[in-house]
Length: 293
Image (cartoon, rainbow, N blue to C red; front, side):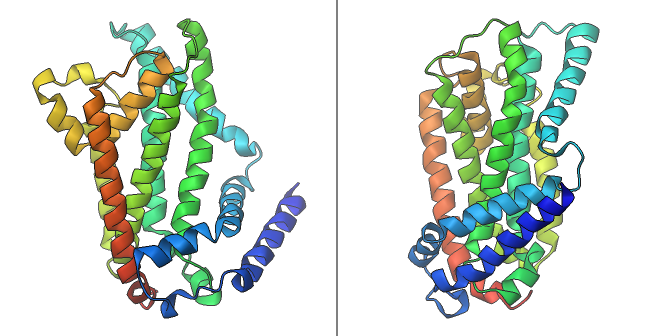
């Protein structure tokens, strides 16, 4: 099995090397703009697929259980939360373990994608220096890999859905939308800070601190009912992850949106604006940043 994995990795590395001929963009000589960055991303989808597979394989290639860890880890978390908050504490919040586990899965996707995205240039310095390819694909690939892992991890919610006698409805689209916007937000932060992190490595430590603080400032271990209603709008306006998690929870519960639809719209606009700013800064700074690798 290990030899098969190694063979697959070598094959994908060969594809990565040969992608230079099909991807004529050598970023140090390309005119920096959002248009060229987006063009390089969309024209490099085969390369992104290779990078996603490579990332997934490298994460689990030395593990006996492999991809099963995407289910085992959240299952163990679910068991721990059920024991603490239902058996020991006896919380009055209906379906509390399901809500908490959903929040943790979505937040984990965001935090990991941001951390990997911000470090994408630094961690792949050797690859960048040896091979000509659009560096932006590294951030997109990390987002794609974490999206796949989170989607697989969501399967652990099925026992809770059955236990609480919830039915799957068309509102499952809320889950898809919430995860998609979480990925977009994480990519936006990655594009924004990846070039800065190359020159100032303190950014990585700052991101680690902010994601830990954000865990407690976002409705993960609690729901929006914990926040006074008069502060809901401002709270959701400055914390798009609160919107994404609440939207995913609504889809899992098969209910109407837990939050005001206007907050969802505002979060969508602000996330897209942040993505625009991230792409703009990345496009302007990527060539300068590579010199510090």
